[in-house]
Length: 445
Image 1 (cartoon, helix red, strand yellow):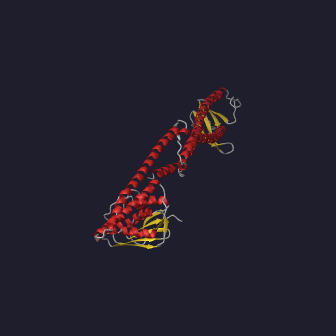
Image 2: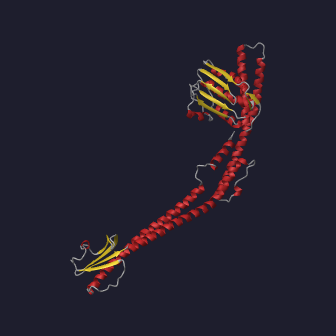
Image 3: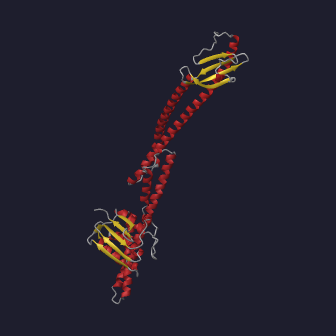
């Protein structure tokens, strides 16, 4: 019972989770990160390779030019001899070894190309390369400022930065387009699954999709839905058959009990026992009726006096008190009624009142009938806040019952009946003293 409702709730939870990141968004973000990562890696690699290759080429060129200039000055020692290399960022110097005109910082530099920092003509700190060529009779220096190369590197960085932004934007556009195409069948499948709840006759999913992964998922969902529908139908039929078949023997027991109660020579002890049998039989009939309604997922109707029924249920539960020093009383509005069959309300009240009687070792159990609810207040051990929801689960029993027996399904049945009729049931510990409060809140009129 209730398998189809739980299945619908599970599907709705999968399809409509607001906090879960959408698959399409993850695809777009993946394309965005991929495009940004690849273009950034390409840009960084380009800058590194450019700097390394350019540096190697400049060093080799300057070294060769320094030795060529040395040979030129050896052959043309006159000061006005013009060397063929004339560039704005190049300065060339030729000295005799040990000449005092050689800048002090340059005098001990060996052959080769050196990175150098010095002030330019305007007094600003500048970076340049200094190529040194030494011979026994002459020393040459070539000072090469690479400000133009720095400017070119900046321009290249700007260009590569723009490329990164452009390719990232392109990756985002490709991700949006691709995700739309990829997610269209998935979104269609999710929408069709979500529409199951509003369809009187379920339509198969597989014919609407291509034979790909989404089509395989649709086929699997069709097969699962067929199995689920078959199981729900079988469970409903079984529950209805069992509930119907139980009515006959229960009616026989009730009829026989009533006949025995009318016997003139019946002792008081036997009468009390027969009354217990009668009350138990009526409780079984009410429970059978309620379970049949749950299996059919249908609400019965009928005006039931809550106060009168609460008194009957309280009287039938006095047996649970045994010899315990516990008083049981009903108070409140005597004319309060609800639109529900007496059997349904009897099952709900019987579980709440019966639990209060079983779990209360001493004190009192008070049933208060109000305009829109019934409160069952006891002086038992109470219930921990973290255990409240567990007690409404099937098969969970309280740990403080004094020798009571049960399968732990009473409160679970009460909650399902409340769901069928739009009621609310709650359980909490009392704040003023020991004990707990069970509240059956009826649907607002």
